[in-house]
Image 1 (cartoon, one colour):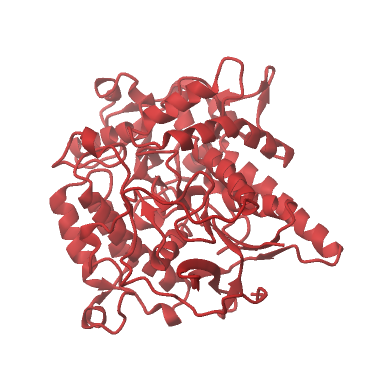
Image 2 (tube, helix red, strand yellow):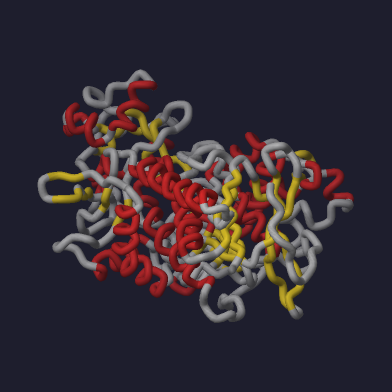
Length: 551
């Protein structure tokens, strides 16, 4: 029986835990907050899949490749679109009640899709509906196992990943578990034959984000410190329309799919002059168009006019957004609402193959923490939940495959700008580490927003790199949850800035004022790893791991 440690409880983590349990593995599921807290819960738009007679897998593939701006892995895209319908049917079997109409399951149109193929639940509460159904499924599996006197699946909430355990396996590194920080403040090790990271993205890097506060990139940071390859971390997607009020609640792409339009502060449409698809252009184009218009009008938000949709449709189709508007004192049925871009989704992350395997044996990554190549430089709307389900399922299937070495990633390299400046944990006793300024999370978020946000430039990124190199995090050995999170964000901020400097072009979600055009010769992913001199075995454990230690 394989011992599997799953870290994270969004769609990807919950699917992995259920699938692994049903396959007969012994599963430990840990999550930093409550079981139901994740990015998944905040997803509004829906999940895209070619399920309808007027659609096709090939059409979904073409839309995904087009949105990815020349950087998609074609094989990963095909897997995503071909296996997606089956995974959506799995969700229905797990209890997700997608919205229905007289023709069957309701479907919507979103930006850059050539067909209406986006399923939603609870109007604009799709993620919450999926999360609720999968949490219930996981809890049912745990209850059933415990009733039979077993511990086939054990759940630990309010338990944070501190670092991965890396051991020597016949001359090569292998991940054999993790160091965790429990709700009582104690640290524990959990040994495992396989670790599946499903920790989500890192929206907390930025001043404005649609992500919850728990999205601090813990999995990518831990994998990087352990020596795993990461890829395309410069590509962070900024959702074009977050409500421009405290908390920046998301205003789904589906609102524009239903016919809402973007206006300047004086009431004129501006997107038709920027792209033929106007408000339904790919997300990076709409986000940049909004940012440019905001700059032209002194930083004021643009307006989203959904009044033409009518109160009845707005309140029934978008109850979550309606409630957010009402809480902000806005009535979007009678007046346009202020919107602005916000950090939303990370296309980059821990590099994986088509089975969720990373460059380190024993380590898998699924969901937003992973870079599968399916999204390229700019994710197609509503492909994120689909990717989480598809590749979480494949990662569990890979656990039973014949033992083989980790995948090899072409062009694996250490980005030059990372050398000596990226990681504060390289040498805790160094003078640079001791003399650095203790990082402040708010200041870090402001720096990333200004230098590595929607618009970037070589000069701004260079200044940011110098500033980041002079900051340090609290020593991880005695840090609490918030301090560990801020340390992770510092590591990831350095990675993103270095990667953005290295990509001297504009492509997808990465736009540089000094290199405004895409360069065909750079249409390839950037894989990188931590220098071996800085990668260290984080904990020493026996070559044959002991039984898991309960948190």
